[in-house]
Image (cartoon, rainbow, N blue to C red):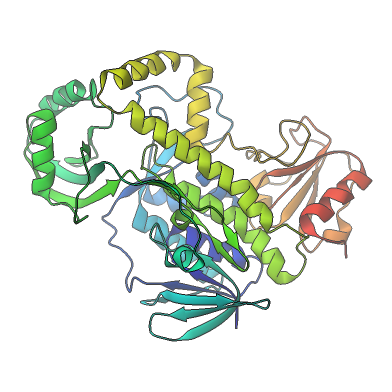
Length: 474
């Protein structure tokens, strides 16, 4: 018997498996695809908060070696603005990296930690009771676990088997995305692209190194057969939109995306939970989807592990939905806004022009980029200073840096007073006593996901919050 079965080995599923293994939870990941995707596939963006998470888990260098850093400015609705000043992170660029590389790195991380991954099989049925979940695979095999998590994508079988509602808007328009070569002179391409973007904000035809261009083309209406596009489809849409196909040829990868926007009504039904695209889908505006799923996994992992290991406080697992559902709802809304801003109608162009001017104000630009990068997230953990519920950026300590102390996925008490103790929780919470720590508060308690759970200086108050988040003292 496994502790947790995860359906789907995409970024959310692989990250969740690794987070659970940090706490010695027995994990099986089942993935319907028999082989990983080709490394030449869709380029995704890892934003600041996701890069912080990789640094927290000791994975950052592996990702930086395989990606290309690009300015984060211009991420909101494609409005060309510089990276805002004052972003509260070491990461003021995004990392462009092929999605299969992300999946491979995270799967390797999970396997190294001891997770089991079975490819070529998928969950086809499930039943749960007071003791656990029985998962039936497509070949008829039955597996038993204490919990099951559906990370099986937008068409999630797990979500459908649960009967969880998935309200929102269906796709109304397609977007073609891909990478390909072009024979037209670069200066001719640049001039025409600038002309088209004056009326079509969602259009992109930009150089991507070695004579390759990354292409994003909005398409009115939805493809009936949802088939993968061809290079001829791209050429036709380019001629329609720009009056030329730029001589495109030799595609690396081609994809079609709809603009459906939906969110699961509940992220938890008994012993079955949802994460990643199984819980929310939205247009790719701002490149937030993969990041949102990885961050779901980091929020859920330690809480589900606590439940399995038997030290979870009452209702801890319910905070997963309480915290992550509003975050995804906000992402859905900002992608709706970005799609509206990219429309070519006069009203949308007028609003886009107004917002473009407003973003010359650094605070406005930073506010919008903090939405895209997830740096602005503050979980509602009750009354307290503004820092409560926010994630903490990395900084130097007397011994190492903050993120160095979070690699094991445990809580962290950072104490400048030298008077506080987490002795009764030493199996779940580490203590760093550092009077030189660059903090404006006496002490704080960090959850394993890096969010601030308590700020103060009194042991009794600390004990109450240690119990709230990490269970009873031992």
